[in-house]
Every structure is written in C-alpha cells, then in structure tokens.
Image 1 (cartoon, helix red, strand yellow):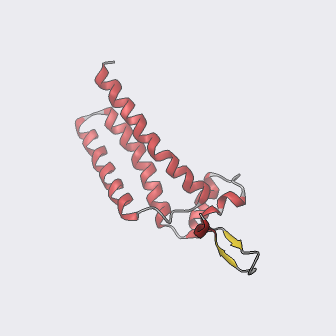
Image 2: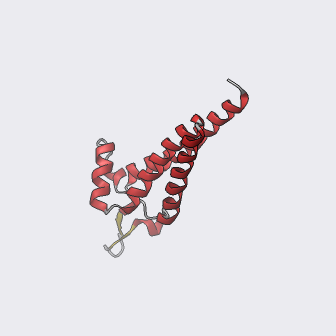
Image 3: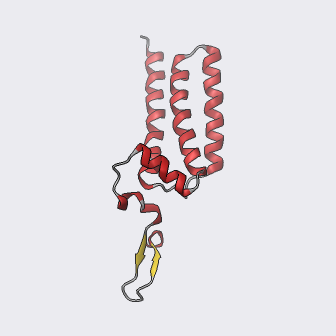
Length: 125
C-alpha cells in the first residue's frame, strides 16, 4: 500500500471518529438543543455528494469514509428533528442500560432550597 492510500485511510478514520462522540452524546443525553439543524442538513447533503463522487471515481477511501460519516451525520440530523418522545425511544433502543439521571441531563430541573421553586438546570451551567 502506498503512502497516498495510507493518508486517505487515516483521514477517513479521523473523519469518522470526529462524528462518533456527538452521536453517542445525543444517545446518552437526548439533548440536541444546541445542534444546528441547517448545518447538519448541509453536511448530510455534502456527504451524500462526496459518496456519489467516490462511487463515480471508484475511490474506496472516499466511499467507505462517506458511507460511515453519512450514517452518523444523518443519525444526528434525524435525532435533532425528532420530537422528545421518539428521540427517547430511539436512544433507549440503542442504549437501554443508560441510567435515568444521565438520560435527562439536557432537561434536568433543580429545586431552589430558598424558594422551593424548580428552575432549569441549564441556567446554572
């Protein structure tokens, strides 16, 4: 294998690895409130076009990379668009053992001991 091919596969590994933590965080927290739907929509389209280009050029480094990145970015986009109940159902199916406290990080509520009123935990971060 020549160095150009090795560099292509290393780039593919880095690209795929970059999207995996975001997808896993969404599964764990169910929180997509800070994700730009437009940006991920454009990403999905771009990766679909890169995949098509790789297929037309018969470039396996591009094909493999873009199949994997397209799947991860499409998952993130879909989770961003889903209503909370469906998002929870998908995340439960992918990680049924996640503890309840970890699941609700994005929607946690705290009670102020002085006023005994609940408040949004995200304001305190």
